[in-house]
Length: 349
View 1 (tube, rainbow, N blue to C red):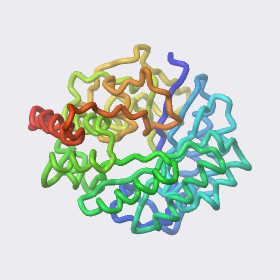
View 2 (cartoon, one colour; view 1 turned 30 degrees about the vertical axis):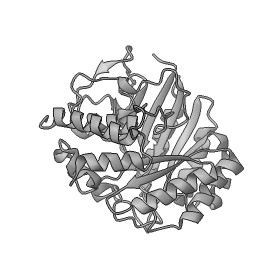
View 3 (cartoon, helix red, strand yellow; view 1 turned 180 degrees about the vertical axis):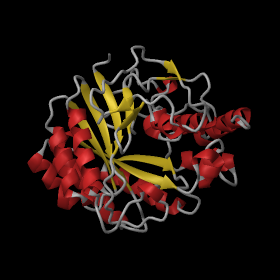
View 4 (cartoon, rainbow, N blue to C red; view 1 turned 90 degrees about the vertical axis):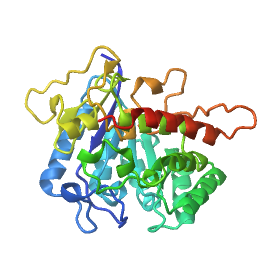
């Protein structure tokens, strides 16, 4: 067994202070602007976190929520406790950034705040850019948190993305750009990435070129598209040095396997559960298609991290920019390459 494992655990914490129309926490897993979580969900969360802390290997964890983690003091208390465990290398929280100045002090008092990583996504309809950037920079400079400023690209927000990238650079913050997803796309339609990603619906190649031009990592975007289209024959380390835990404690090698109900490894809350990870690093993916979560597709062999400094994040890797021929725009070159790959896999289901 490997001595270091990354875990993506999605908890049932629901309270959020934002009302984003494109939020993916919907239906049975909807966030709430009024309530945090039922007692049953909170007790389950505490037990799952305790199980994670008791593993015999080193761990880096993305401790995800349905709502805003910094809106919940009980959640932060348990996250802080987790950072005090000797086998925990980092605890990554996904945040909207609005409450960092008010609540990071709790993590500092109750835990090791230097183990906290922040994936801070900007929501321009809910918070001003200046306040958002100032909060993330505060976390990075005051508490030493590993912080990433994240943008979501939709067809109508290019100006906002440009401003976000510029502000992040001026503040000395890492910048990432992801494709915005349509939360209403049912799982059964995931064979068509264009249905799930609004920026790709009308003009696929133009959408890819725009994303790269605005700051999306070409290498990651290419793998993102390929993983959604066709995973047949692809080798992946999920299930060896990475696994996914769902809200109720079910364990799968990745979230795509969970969505398909495929090869469940067990439940951490079951008496006598023993986690069995793959001995070999690389195994063929059995999902076929539809791998849309970065936490999952970053484990594909084509993105193997040999030679790259390991980051305390399940979403960030060092960038390797494509080398374009002299006089050629790299974003155009990469978009054409990806368009050709898209045409080769079109119709794969």
